Length: 197
Image 1 (tube, rainbow, N blue to C red):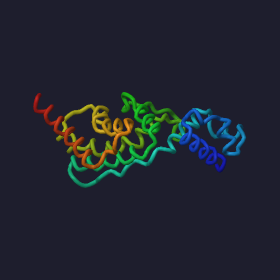
Image 2: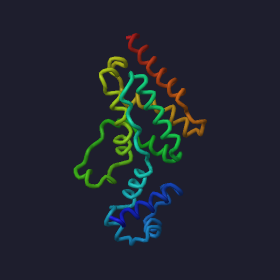
Image 3: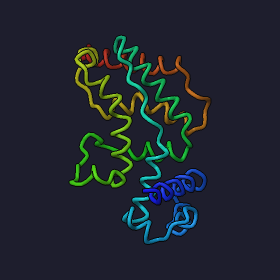
Image 4: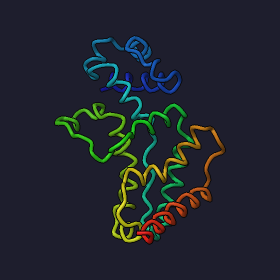
């Protein structure tokens, strides 16, 4: 397993400094000091290696706030997500945002995925890591009472979209106060929509 760790270390370093194009089989094996045959024992192809390297660059999901009302929990979670997004390299932020794509709730599960986590797509990794935090806040009875029925994917876009756009546009970092505004506007819009019906 040491050779696998060295390969992943090399691929991650190349990805962080040169982007996905820098992660070639030759560059990774040379940097890791490992033969090509060894690489192919651990990874089926270069795409699988790049996906594993991307997954390594992703910061851990923020802790889910357990206390407070829906608004305060969403503000805490959004502020934590904003810090993660702000610290991530811009190409990684863009890849992650695009990796979510439409219909993220309907991901196929293939047999054998748990044995080789690098086979997961970037999209699945993002969902597993980051969406689960929102699940624990939005899938509550309090959220359903306050927000009514909602399109889950659209809610994530409404909450996280401004933060990701801000990062991609290289504007000043979004602070807690801005997160409060995003959450307040979101909740107000949901309430207004419910009373219009």
